[in-house]
Image (tube, rainbow, N blue to C red; front, top):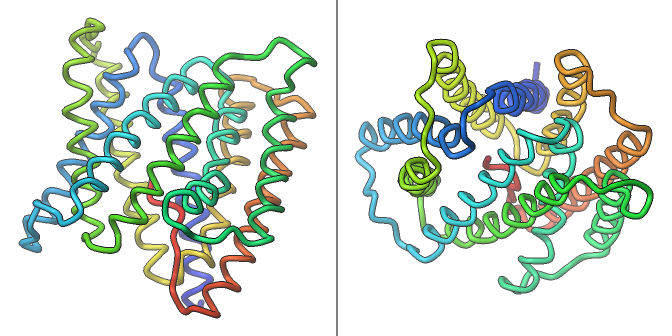
Length: 294
């Protein structure tokens, strides 16, 4: 098996694990959003801290503005995503949150001066139509948590805009450390403000599972990117939409509407357009670009 096939299989496995992560967030009942977030990011903080300590990497960072910006906007994005997952069907939530790469093209154009190519316009159009098909404003009562999922995608796009800038000067492990630290510290005061719940033994097991699954996802995804350029394998991460839909059907009997399937198909098609366009761009510039660092 060549490296590209290994990368593709690992990314599909990572997509499945990410679907499990989303399902675990939805599975944990009667635990506030910020308490879930704390356990998820706390494990990540421990994991990356061990790696940094072993490699003797400085935690100070170079571009602190981008590091803090990435952490704060990532914190907001994760909060909104967990809120949406807790109250909306998993297939729709995951699909809408995965519109962020298309928004990223706009923010990189506005803030980083990166040009918008024709393939970006096509992908943005497909993504927008797909999102409208899922939300269906005017055709039915709009689920407010669908809007929250879209807002999560907006902040995720801003997060990756900061990330693109931070990667010019800072180690990826330092970036993850700052993000995990900001999320963990940010959750603490809000947890106490919203009155944290003392987990039962089973709930504690669920929270521990959430942290473990999140760490396993990061490990598999990082390994996938070692075998091939990000632009060649990132398209496979969109299989998480399919896995999430299947988990929603099996576990919660959430049967996605026909419009949801059509919308998801358009968003995946838009992702493929991005994939093809970035692949062509990478071959011309020989500079890999990654859109997935969740």
